[in-house]
Length: 312
Image 1 (cartoon, rainbow, N blue to C red):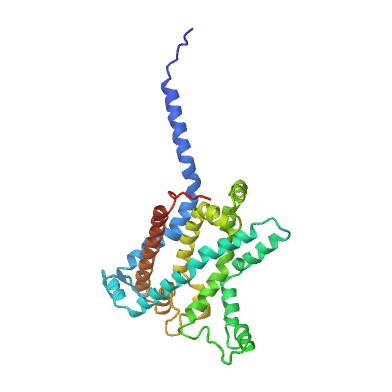
Image 2: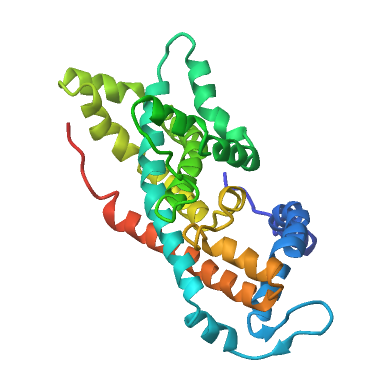
């Protein structure tokens, strides 16, 4: 017996369209408050900073004056800027590889079902919740001439104190140590989440095939953790390029600009020298560097990765 399909009325069609439109708009309505806040606090100031890069603006007493590319020409010949860029690159090279590899080893160590393992995880994560200002002050005391580090070196035979924060050769690397110390626990937690999503059956199969110990992590953990490795590489790279608090608290960019980074130079030009437009210019160049670095990381991950077959 054939059923006779009833024609859909015009009112039903309009109701269906209205329902679909409402369904499509609902997520955006939930996002609207956050977008308004971001627009006021992030997007509008960013656009304003971009426009100030092409002006001369040194205070609130006079409006910005359009000068075109003069700030960028000044930047090209600014020796201090290139020195801060070099320091930022050294920070990137010195910090990121450690923060990509070391937290993964820590995550593997604490991803075990042992008594009291939660306390070990907490001890590694504790530096993350400590304020950067407090950490900087504490480490500055440790680096002091009469601090614990120099006292320990004297106890094993060193006769002179090391100038950790006042030596142009050591200041930047001493500040890096604080960034690494604070970042280990944070990235460990990211890796730990990834490790706990790997099926235990894979490790059991590897043990049966004779791959045990660190070998199974090389052939199973590392390939499956590639998305997390990429995430940590991108986040730690961006954090290293915009480091500020550690430098401000511990060295103020000295000695002789040896620990001055690009972000600290932005702060110095904008809020110490009151050259807001030039500070915005430096910030714009830093933003372009960060975007380029992120794109490079993503492209490298696509070309290096998912096609390779890993065998036990």
